Amino acid sequence: VFNMKYYDEMKYEEMSDVLGTSVGALKSSFHLAVKKIEAYLLTED
Image (cartoon, rainbow, N blue to C red; front, side):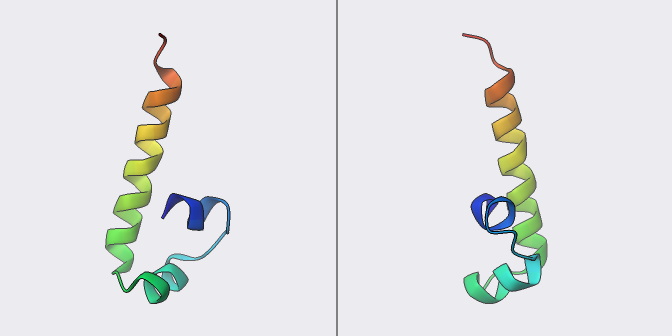
């Protein structure tokens, strides 16, 4: 979902058709992916 939205610049409606998933579920997945990426980038090892 992140790749489709960020790199392919697809709209949620387009992704919903391709993946057979609701727009709400896609938005939730995208938001979760962004949060995980932010957390990864902010952690210092």
